[in-house]
Image 1 (spheres, rainbow, N blue to C red):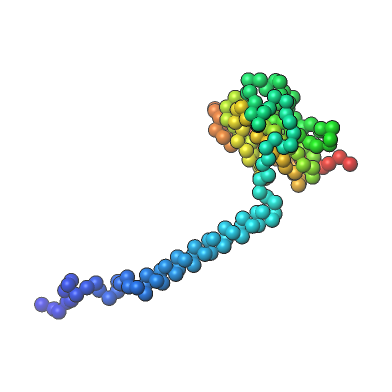
Image 2: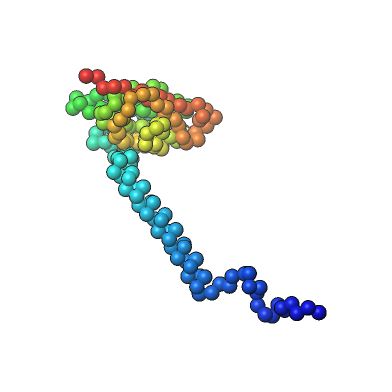
Length: 188
Ligand code: CUA
């Protein structure tokens, strides 16, 4: 018989025992990691505020829309609202409004032309089921809910053509529900 240590003499020396010291060191590491994550979150949120990439969603965009009350309308009676003639319009006070109707499986207008560098208030509604309206490469991303009007004001900084996609599953044609926003240089 060799004199191997019996199991009653505790764990072999290669396994670190969880002493007060060890636990304290592990806790310090976790605290350090948590501090780094908190700092990263703080700076990224701050950077997003400073660069103006936060979404600027606003109620009715300061405009009263016929047939729309508190952001709601009757989806069966879109004809009596400005959504009857979707597209971009310039108001007498010089402000720009874009009306978009989402309907399985297209946006109306399918191609929206807007000027760069001018604030545009979008109003989007659905004529049937829930859709989404996300403009690729921008922070525009709203749910389009029947009976409700999604309104927000945005200014496009760059010219070019962007896809407007439906990002809410709405039926068999969902993946084909793609419109376009053409951002043009402002007319002099
Ligand atoms: Cu409309 Cu998906």
